Length: 138
Image (cartoon, rainbow, N blue to C red):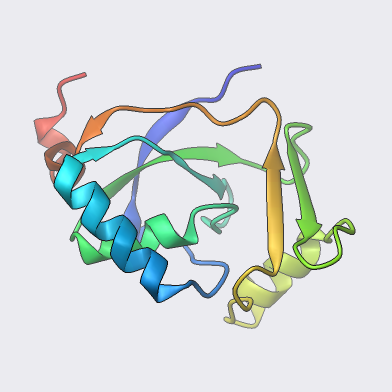
């Protein structure tokens, strides 16, 4: 079963965890230097909650991107598993939604670990394509 990558408005994406700002800075510099975006961000399709890619979401904001390549998924999807980063135990997806959507909070850095099977694809977007939807030439 393959994944569908779409361009999703950055403004509609919800962060789920704190990030390591040193990593955000380094990743921002790397992506700005290459002028390419190659890793899609998997998000929960009904809420826009980031499953994996909080650092990249911050990079998108740093670079002023309007759109991000995303994969819309659901926690009931057999391709998605989520675990507690610290002990490896299954992590309840309802707890994620409650914490982020209902309480308006995000988790501390490295709280959840999402695993995808098959692995997520690589994409190839020029940054300029993510600034303006009208510049898309795929």
